[in-house]
Image 1 (cartoon, rainbow, N blue to C red):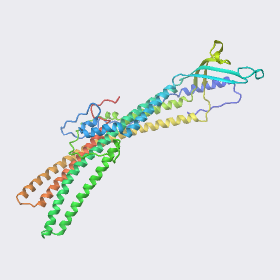
Image 2: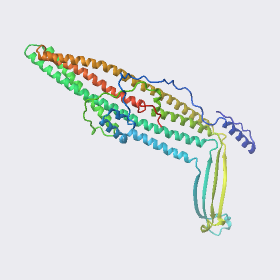
Image 3: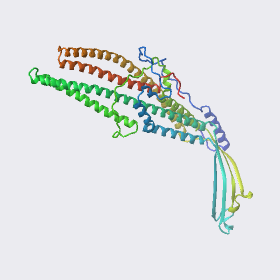
Image 4: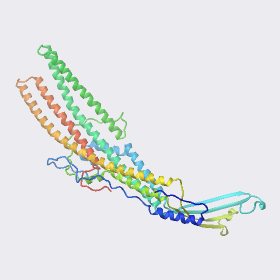
Length: 481
């Protein structure tokens, strides 16, 4: 809103007061908070869920410790440690404490302010006597109680308090989001580590198989039964397997170091012993309702931040209106410090002051424009957070669906390779096949098992990330309070 003031010269003071009152009434018509935009994305009835194939969905724990669904004591210990030592969580706690302190500060502005004042002075020309009649230095003592209170005529203080309260709620949700994010990060990295250990165990068997094959070929080359091309090929296969094992160990070190940071320990002293095998991931229920998106703390935080920005538009608008302050004070004053509280020295006063803004060079208009821009930004961030939430959940569900399909095919392949290996073992015992053919069949089975191990690890990771995307649970929907 743009206001233009026309102030002709020599306007009587009474006319100025009337003009100020008319301006205040005009501004009152556009006071308060603006409506929120109505441009939210369409909401589907349910998310796409992976087929469960008649498997019963895993029940979620009732104590919100969602990671216990994986029944892994090491994971439980790591997340419990992170709850007290993770720095991202500590920062979120500090932000919440700061928001609560600011809320107390803002609420204090709605309360009367009571103060005590006292002074004592000595000098010439004080005490109300003419300087010429002063016989010498005079004493003056004062003591009093001052009371002041701003009347919230147009809701400025109320809206400031509401905005600060909404900021506090937003920070509380951001703390919950920080905890949920750290929990999901630890779980995801931990399951990648567990899959790495399982894969490493299979790769150790594969390396040993390649060693034995290389030794047999070298023996046959020495006896003139095979050429050196086969030996070179065996050397390359062994080196490839050894290189893969080194890459796995490098990846494992990076995973352990990442967990160390999340649990608040130095990477130089933190270690996790290998554990195998990784059990099957919990089954996700089908037909998850889309309203579960409301569980997400980042969406709740963005919503509260948007409401706070809306309230601050009202605060900025209220700056155009008059401020009414009530004051009262009482006490005593005397040139004799010993009688400063005597009846004859007592004094008191009660007053009211109305300040009506007229011209400030556009500062308040700029404040309203800035508050509106903050509201537009908060709404866009809220909408974006919702869209990201839908994307996050659908991506995890799609990943679990395709991983399930891939695992079924890989398990069929592993079964076929296992049968081929069993036949090769029988043929080797009967002398119908050599040891090299037996080792080739063994490595095919090991490769199939290794791919299944990778898929199981990915299923665990995606399940943990899905729970985080759902706000910490897939149990029957209950809005977070």
